[in-house]
Image (cartoon, rainbow, N blue to C red; front, side, top):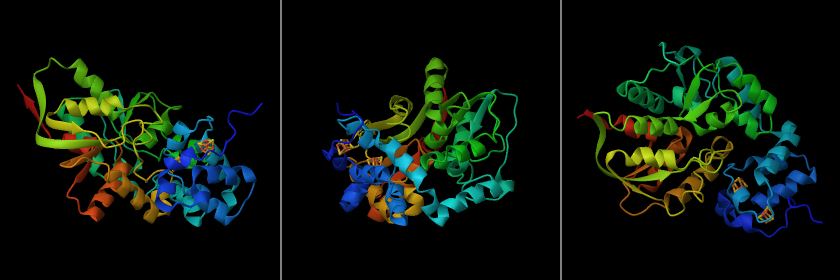
Length: 340
Ligand code: SF4
Ligand code: SF4
């Protein structure tokens, strides 16, 4: 009897893979990567091939044989560690030295103290590229929510995707999580699940706004047409599709429109799985393909991930389409919260 996790080589995964879509090279397709991963080939080229995967999980969803393609790729990455580019090895040293993946100064790792029991874990892309961080704090303050921010160490998620679980745990566990935690980065969310009672900020806000429905305030923005982009790590990986949309729908002035491929089939932004870090050309091409799926007359793309935002914004700039890109916190930070 055939093992139902064996690749039947049907090629269906090629029809959805954003990396294959940009280059059409069989070796770089999900099917090609499975072959390399299982072959035992260890070389620089094998490392290059296996690292060129955005971990978007579209292949996992579509495979009729039930192959866990991303898991197979991660297992393959584990075997070719000695051939990984120097850049990957340097990340570990950078986090060891500075506590963050961007190598920012340790004095930028600020804390906010309060007596509340909610920890906001901003993650590297929040804390050091401060637009999303400042906006999240602004909203928490505006809504009168008690929270605190600790000095943080990177959640280590990048190492999980490279098949280096021990390295991930080493960094993640340098953080102290004793209360409920909210994050704005879906990558941090996945890394923190075993260590904390974690929620995405949009899940938290969705609950908060429902519970406070009868309070005398409303959130207002001038009329705007928003396309919501599902981050792969929040959507396909965690199945969180509705909370961000619910929050946006509660804002007066917002017309929510959908991308052509949404939500379970949402195309990837191209940044994940270290593709943006290692191969900007491919990550930008993938982001442009995603942006092509917006409706005409979309004013703004909103996403629930600070990394998706960076890559989609880059694509919009290159395409000169006049469409802005913000995280959901940044958008809400621009809204007025009016007492009634
Ligand atoms: S991984 Fe699944 S979808 Fe892709 S070729 Fe193999 S059987 Fe087909
Ligand atoms: S996870 Fe996404 S990028 Fe990676 S092989 Fe599958 S479809 Fe392609």
